[in-house]
Length: 335
Image 1: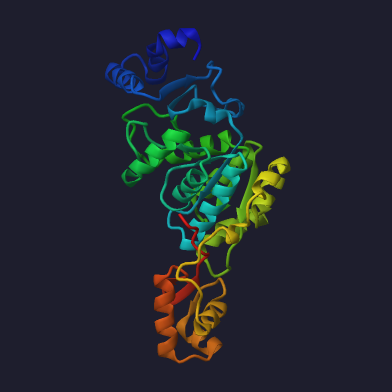
Image 2: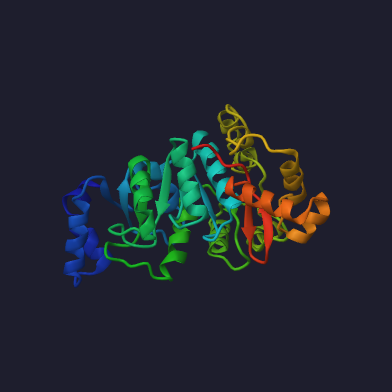
């Protein structure tokens, strides 16, 4: 903050809340007394310049963690709360490699793709930023309390909402404009045709940010939002290098390529497969497939297919879907 703001944060809080909310201002001041808690005003040199450049940027940000991380080059990774296992693994892997390459990973702390992206960045010992739709005196969803603590320890939680703000539905579109505003680009991984992630992508385009999407199976409802974005001009992403090239950061590709490809960095549960299971996995491909079609494709007996599917599901190689269908998953990264 400026020295004046340091001396009297109450003046900024009165500006944010109004003079009549004495109780709210007092609650904010008590929260700010805790370790690693900050109020960044628009005149603070630590206020992220990329966010300051967007129309309607918030006059102040509440931050828990390291405020300087907000000015680092960032990629926002967003997607479905009801993500598939493969979608979560994709988010984890992309976030890990991009964080290792030097990008801070920004997301919204939601279940599904958001949480997987945060965890991927943490796994790579990189920085991650959670933009919250509540006051920072609470964690939403509540099950992510431990994750929020990890993020604050190596990155930051940020919100434009003062303490006491509940998770109301209209707060999250406002939160989304901050995610895209902080980042150089937005990567969408699994999004239904009507998804909050598409709002983030639209806002990113309006703010002059790069919009990217990972395609999926035509049978997967969670791929339709990504396909729509690609039709509308979003960059189609298949690799980490695609992301870096779109962002104009190919200088980071050397670091991204310093390790193996994602499928070379994963541990396959259960070791080698027997030939029948390999045949079954090949028959599954990467789209939802029903039992009858698997029997037809493999030539295996029905009971053999069922038992092998159950084993593969236990090992995390296959997931069961609605309507009696099955889908192959990406290999799980060793944790």
